[in-house]
Image 1 (cartoon, one colour):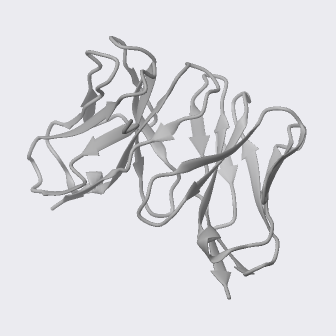
Image 2 (cartoon, chains in turn brown, purple):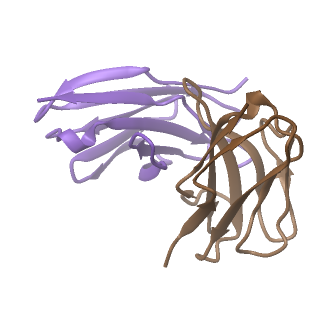
Length: 113
Length: 109
């Protein structure tokens, strides 16, 4: 069992390019999340999905979009990357919608030049 | 607004005890989590408190006082591998996690 996988591990991207970060979990968890982590700041929620077919906006959704076509996959797309989107991106999942523990993927380090 | 405060950095000695504090102000409260994050790695779950009091799990313990908006993580018999960042997070009224910036713990021999 892999848990949560993310791809790519790291990426350097030119500003203005489109990029999709992939996230797949094999735990059949209902809820999935995308966070960004920047030095000196806490994890900030970008988008979330409580169950397949539904998505919601987090604290910092601008410039990002997500889809949840099935239980396992939750891709994050940057339509036109900007340097301020340079960050480490973590995908997470949890079984229920409420107070269950979130489990994190290994992260994607993205640099936008 | 929602706010979680924890010290930016702490230093402790191998074999000693350290207490990492976390204070929070959030819209609603449905539990508090502590996560450990080694440099360059993902956060991993340490503990969860929803009722007041102390939860003990091996060398790690976590305390919660809901009336004071306060929690602490206590690490005993410190080992070099405990060098990491410790993240405090609160589940708010919408069941979303609000995260502190983390406390970087440096263990010296």
